[in-house]
Image (cartoon, rainbow, N blue to C red):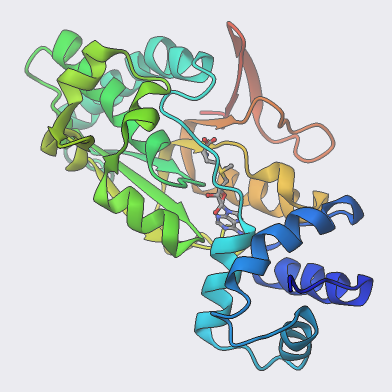
Length: 290
Ligand SMILES: C[S@@+](CC[C@H](N)C(=O)[O-])C[C@H]1O[C@@H](n2cnc3c(N)ncnc32)[C@H](O)[C@@H]1O
């Protein structure tokens, strides 16, 4: 028999999920939560939702329970070049500036920052966002790097709270349906190696990207500073207070003149007034003043 969830169970699970990752689950999400947790109940050592909520509300959850709950409760939808227009802005507006930054930094090695341009995919999921950025960087450098700027001048960090998606991002191996979403056959040939039915990100692109686990609700102080941040399709899950805290931390760790791109359904209205706003086609670009 399929275990059923009482309103009290749902309340306890909503609180637990909020506490571990800040995701707000509305009253209309009980069916979704039930659907996602039912398959892992026995793995969590529970026969019923009642068993699980008892465990969650006493605070006696171990690392395994937290990992499984995070992997089940995060929404990891993503694709290569998702929404397309932010990547057009990245290629045509942000990248020319980044090439100039590398050149200037190389000409002034006595300045504190090295030539490496740092970028961050702050809700990386299975890695498509970070690899899409790397493909654009590599293509732009090939056309406009003039031998002065190389792929080694760029580093991209991808972070996520879910260990399951991070493992896939690190592997960089995608199925035919995943590469069909957003990649032209030409891009796929140029930046992937075929491995049976799967496609592996080429070494050249893989080398530019690192992944690590991070709860975006925590402090960013260990990350260093960034020239570009992609934080797309994650803020929608959080409270306004959490969004404010995250945006203010982005502002602090962006280099002067650095760029922030949010998801199409996300904006800074009533959340932050420190960033400058620019439109580029259909994309809103947030910038830290120089
Ligand atoms: C919908 S995906 C967005 C992926 C990509 N940025 C895009 O736009 O295609 C949201 C990601 O945020 C991650 N996430 C949710 N809460 C998080 C948190 N507190 N800290 C870090 N990552 C979190 C999820 O695991 C999920 O992979």
